[in-house]
Length: 315
Image (cartoon, rainbow, N blue to C red):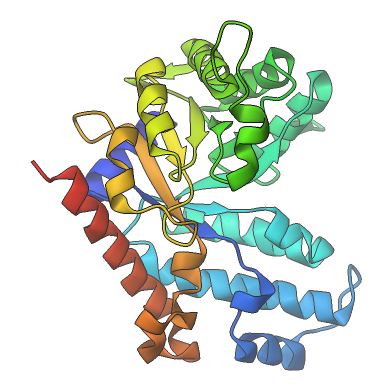
């Protein structure tokens, strides 16, 4: 699967993934109002939750329509859907399928982490399949899932197994973009290594069991807000593809990102979520207005791609 992502990035010359994280405050009011007026009462949730679930899917659909020709992938964050209960998860499920229809790779930002059969069940739910009465079924059917490595190899191996069975991939949390990540990830071991380097080495080791061309299906999440750490991890993980959140709203700029990539410009994909999907709320894009939220998202995506190209093609 990672080879497919690499190829799509190359085709579009855009190492960009759009985060579909539809917080309620990002949704134009008219979408919710229209959903409230038109929804049919359904048995799995309150009217408000049902309406919001429909509004979230419509919001996603319009943004996806606006950016699908520009980027290779999207990354829906499952918590933003779970907060709306079953209607929210149906919106997530519909979003994944719609993105596949548009030819996009889907990275499910689910941050699962457990051991044994529980870990394998998570993997099968998101990137695998289950057999029911002799029929193969896929539940959420993302192409990649994010995984928390805190439980060690016992938590990762079941995901790697499912990756290999289904030609899918994972991104393992190594050095996350949030300010307090250092409370654990920067702690020095008895050998003097920061913990994120220890995890990075394990990710590289786990990845040897799932190579797909130059890179492994076992990738790493490394926050764009930590460029110096990324340079070190890029050396420690030569065959590991990096998913880098933190561009834009969290403070990282294109100039911070050169160390995430190899010299040939491959090896990483950069995520922007609210900076794109909520662009219409920003002064720079206010000319688009609320009803032009998708057009604003498209322009923000174009601006991000051009920003990255200035750095990646600087030579």
